[in-house]
Image (tube, rainbow, N blue to C red):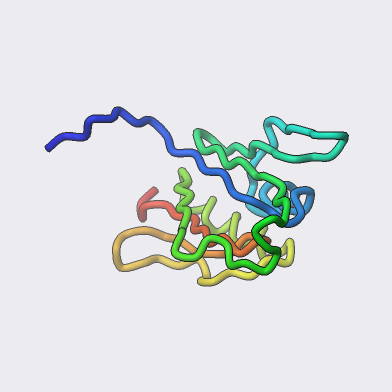
Length: 133
């Protein structure tokens, strides 16, 4: 049965303990641009981070659900890039910024070069490119 929705992109929204630090991490370490922000009472509350057609909305956590709760359990975001070199360059930027990779950039048996990492709030992400890309 064919899909009944004609989706073109998928965006996501995640909560951050320290939105300023998260904006800097996604910008400087991962390589996204900050394309818009929303302030409330003079404080940054949200930022839209963009890379190509991908949008990630970062939201300041208000702590109402507890600061120590596990975020992103069982949730994984895959960022697909245009070249194999971008995979390695992104991994290097994350490590240079003090981030830790869950897996090093490597060619995988299923035909991609990829690595995985956690952002500052524990959300799990990956960066990949098809081999030959």
